[in-house]
Image 1 (cartoon, rainbow, N blue to C red):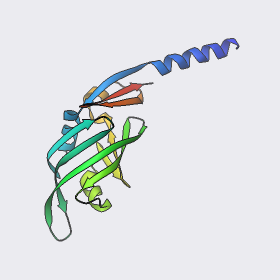
Image 2: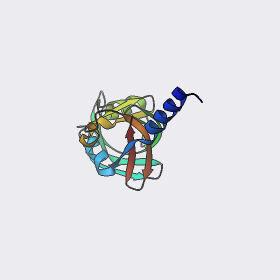
Image 3: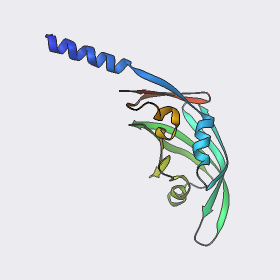
Length: 151
């Protein structure tokens, strides 16, 4: 191994090891969801491997407006930049794409596209305070997601 390979290896090792752990609690997720004016009585529960969101959503159908009680189970599938992408594992009472888009597509915090919900972690002040970096990894536990933000 020549000198430049040793330096490159050392830099990569430092880059991989440096990340800041930030806990994202169920209450923090709940606050982001409450910014959506179509959702009421929102409750969030984080367990090992999934997020369960319950509440009422205003379904603005062409003919009428109706409040629907819902329960949605989200499972993480990938990370992109400072966003986590979740797959809708279960949605009660209806899993209709057009209804999901009207309820859950609220940029910049939440976006919905083809059965997946993206949560942008830049919506939290605690993560915005870190000017550079992206989500390197995350760990879901009881009550919180620990997001590792690094270069």
